[in-house]
Image 1: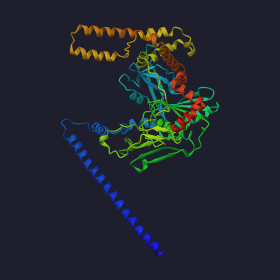
Image 2: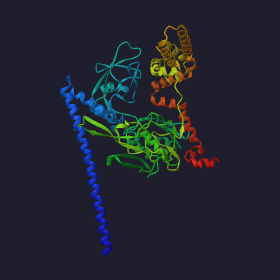
Image 3: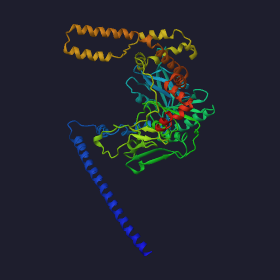
Image 4: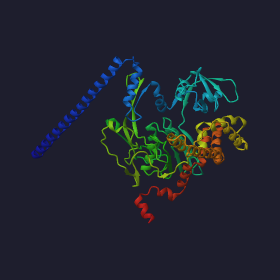
Length: 560
């Protein structure tokens, strides 16, 4: 016993010695950091004070301070930003899931503030605001010079207050004034839910706010009443939002106890581990396909990455955006009016992959201590790529938009023509049987200022400038360039006939959106969507779906 006690004392002495050295070392390290911080802070203060007091022109202190802060943040990632009170609106919208407004989806068409669509059962819809209305004034203020964000801020406000919109409507010479009483507008995250066939359901989720979890649960339950055995979840162009909503949705489809996500940062509170804590409402017998593209970011990538790493479903589309940074918001002055949103951690999905793509910060300002791997494994042993973003199991790209369609889309010509045309029809079905619509659209385009850039046109202009700058008097060269330009112009004249099917498709999508609503537009658009069609094909093929989760080595053995 005495011998054991001596050993115990000896080990205790060693332990406390090591502990003392560790604490001392930590204290010195922390002390060094604070000394560096104080030194840098003094330098910044001196420079700032000298500029404010000595610069030749008197500086606006408040505006200059904001510029200085933004310049300090400039070399960091794009999500670390200084925010003032009015710039927190987007954050509040996500966390509260609603805002005070009149229920209008706004857009800019031909540099005019335009109603894309009024929301169902909103003050705007009830008072008769319609798609295509041009908002000329908001409470008497001209919208001509307003940005989209500025216009939205003027229209939004506390519930119960009024806002007057002066609207120019097609067919009316005078402005129409609509005085609308603001209400709480709940933003819808699930844009569409429906059946693709007898057993395949489809859900399009457009963002992750406070409403996403309940809306997804309701959408899944509705599909389950249709005896669904396969589900496509469309996260394309979904920029993300609240992390907690992504975890809540993953809980609905992953086995209880599964690791879903980790966050790692320098501060202890930044290091978190997320595990599914509930029994899923989508059992293992329900096949899942997640659709992503380069516009799928953040929370969308958490969903897709976890589903892929846990071999819970197939990922289809193109590589996602690669936003895997966690932000925290810190108040700066105690009033809540000035805040700093800081990247404090990074997202890691179950395999250990970092979602964030490289190059998000200037390498010169950071001390890079971690070397990220490039190869990882799913729970079943499949190889998956690291390096930022989620790589799909099946890569399917959307067809590239043709030149004339792209120009019409960019200038809002489909929307403008459809908005004018809708007044001729009582129902959308009437539009479908109208044999004159395409000829009229062709005539409409003939009256527009359309500048189509076909392949090679830009290269021709650049070549012309470079070569003629060397010899602008060479008539042979001038004739040669004119000949090629004439050929391109003649080629562009044929574009309408070559693209007529694509033009017709876009035109009718705009018409159905204006006349029947955004849900019908989504329903119509996915009928010939190649990514959706690929998802259906894989989900309907029992062997194809199951083989998606077989490790590469086993797949090679089976095929041999």
